[in-house]
Image (cartoon, rainbow over all chains, first blue to last red; front, top):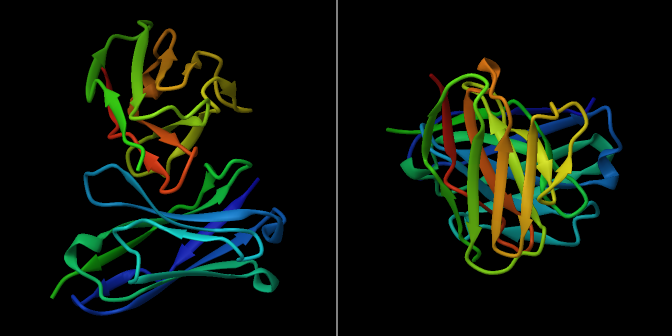
Length: 118
Length: 107
């Protein structure tokens, strides 16, 4: 069974930064593309960013382009999301997810809550 | 950006009844449409991939159909455990997008 565990969430002030991590286990992390997604309180799902298995293809949603940076370390089986210039609209549960063949998310972590507030 | 329009937003259905949720794409996406179930305080779970392909471990009462721009998720003989939000999702092109969701309540 695929295991994905997000960490690094918490309370941050507007304009601040936060780095999320996602620890992957029980599958060959280096062979899979990965996604970050989020869900604001009471809202639907929003895809944020994608990184290919070797980090040679990266995509962002317009809502985070220029502020968020996705990265991975295959040696550590870890995925990251550096989030800068945070606003209250970034308050959400953030999920990492494994991308199946075709880039949809086939397995999700439990999520980590990010709250942007003064 | 491909917009996915899901309907209805909310549905209250009695146990053993049939549920139909539709998802319309703003342009053709072939069969690159996937369905998720999200129960309260849980992560989304993949139900159907590529419009109609079943997922191991998902009950057979869940099925999907469609191609191009119009897709349907069907839940045959609804059970109490199916109370959840359901989302469609396209992976045809970036940015990846989701439908707005359908909340299914058990009467």
